[in-house]
Image (cartoon, rainbow, N blue to C red; front, side, top):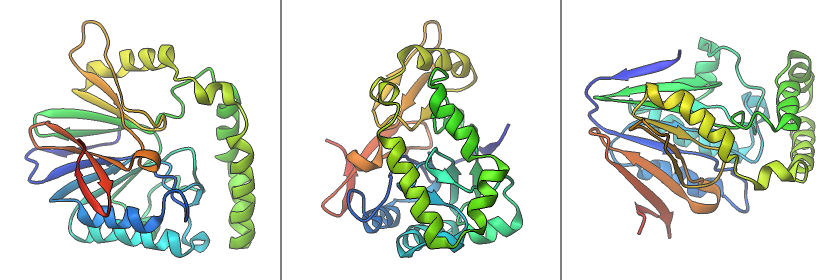
Length: 259
């Protein structure tokens, strides 16, 4: 079980998710500026779907990708833990976070599924959340296909511009498909998931759903929190050493506590 132990946090924990960065709705410049404004960051956890579509190997990056990666790299260079948890829009990911990948990507931890953080006296769990709705079989079939060796191998040998174009076309088609599952929050499936994970943690953080929701289960004092997205809300969640939580919003070039 991938996890990190921080017995005496001497900084702050930040959680961000679902930025879906592009050059229109969610400019990379704003996101990089937000990263530079994080006060006393000890650990930054990104819960997936960094760009509208992201092909992870550097050969596929554009200036937009490099700008964001540089922002993460500056945090890493300062000694901050930078944790990336893969989402459904993140493709051609390292199957193992080898030394070669650690030289290429600005993350200290690269996680495919769930991840745990022992933060002082608290224990937190994290996941992107795209597989929680096990009834969305169409999406789960697509995820299995897009993560298999043959599919990835074909993309890796393509010229970068062609691979990005095909990935963008696939993403555009997926946006308009399977709408029944995209517009309905999976209450039943989320409750079942919460029941399975909350006994192990003080709080569990989930991305993917672009909502700010608290999920509780009977007989358990822990809480599952769906983190609001960066794309539409420009939201960052900040956790203090004792476990107190602030919701921050980036507006007019500044990151402040949400009113």
